[in-house]
Length: 396
Image 1 (tube, rainbow, N blue to C red):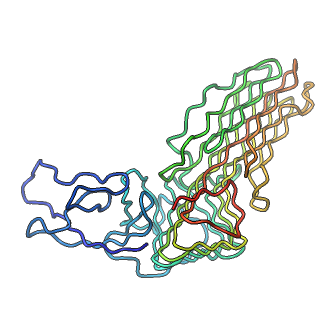
Image 2: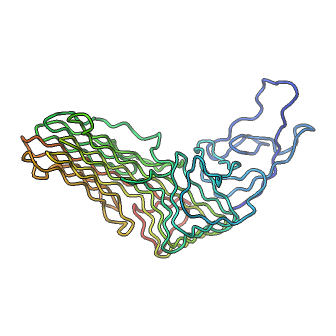
Image 3: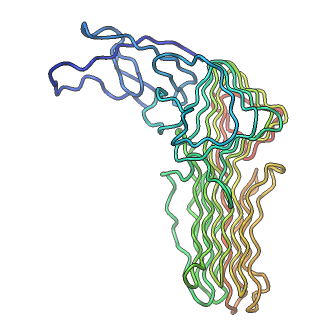
């Protein structure tokens, strides 16, 4: 899966020439005859003038999932641990380039091998990519975390630009606001619950109908309806995204988590926030061994609606029980609410996200937020011995 290609790069001429010779590559790295794709641009494979110089590139992966290091290949092994900010980390290579121009800018950490030896958390706006010219190993008992958390970090590359708009917002009401819809991705999220005196609930967007072909994060939930300043339950963030690509093998003995966060509880009659959807995990290598590994991208639970007391936030998905849905938060009590307005559970494995409960009828109670949807997990080969939620999609 690794290849070295020598390509020509034109130096700037002394005079400006407004004719553009170098078209963009196609989505699979296609170029016209006689040209090759380098960093998203089609360049000549032979010198075009006396000023041309050769530029090497080391590429791993295939199709839209092929990534190259332009110039000198990785020369050292990499050991990861701690927190990585994909926007600012000095570990991100400056010469990583997709062969597909549609892929987003990413933090590419490249090495002759990569060992994730202690817990590693990735945050920031860019996806995380681990690129190895031989192997990547995730140690037993270690978590590679690009998930978003109700209290804590937001996963690297979360909040995809391609998330569909919510078709209906929850209604504001001082008599109990509507609950919010969850974030949808590869399944539909749960809708919110209505307020106790009829305030309408927020609705989730539909599920995506085709598998993604670019790295992208999950989708956040809606904000709950408000019953006054500061009372709306905040949305759960969508999960982040990570791509592991190696020329020889992946050895996964720990946990990869790209789940969404639980929605916040409504305060003082506010509607509960919707849970965030799971994000995205892509694995590519000729051989992938995943003994006892846990690979998850589940949805967060919806927040509970507020009564006289505050609703509780929805739960984040658990890596200890990766096929179990994250539960929604309890609704607030008082005002005759009796804890109604519970948030909906997030999606996990084959379990669909649940709608939030309505507030107690004819009482001043907020509705619960809907649970978040599952994300997407893809590999180029089948994987045995791992617990994967949602189910693995295999695309050679």
